[in-house]
Image (cartoon, rainbow, N blue to C red; front, side):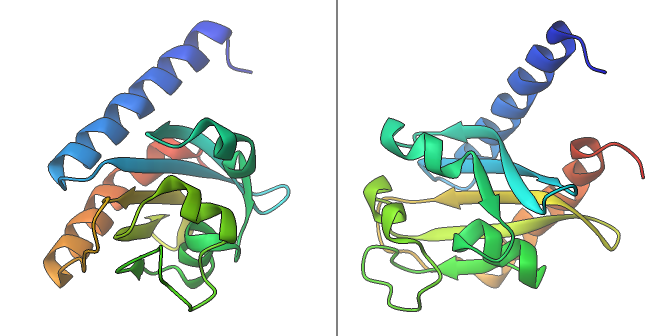
Length: 151
């Protein structure tokens, strides 16, 4: 069982990690979710620039639901060039409240094991390049094993 000090340090480290990723990609918003194998939900670990009214909604996301859930289910990047006008049905209606337009979520994989998801967003329409998608996937893979206990 984690002590509160370890948990707080873990949360602080993940927030710092997320801030660095957001900055590296020139984004404004981001989320990091950890897979809970018990209920197959993605549990929020860190978030940046997410409106307070959405925080309760993104605390626990079923695999397969929303942008992060779709990335987890498909185990591949999910991108929306403009979340505000997207009609694919991937984004949940509440996601528009972020005012994010260009968004990208990737699975955090430790080999073949899904550990969570990492998502970033820009306030302008944006299509992430194949190189940017691969860079975010690489960052996610490198951090994935630290996200879940071995098992």
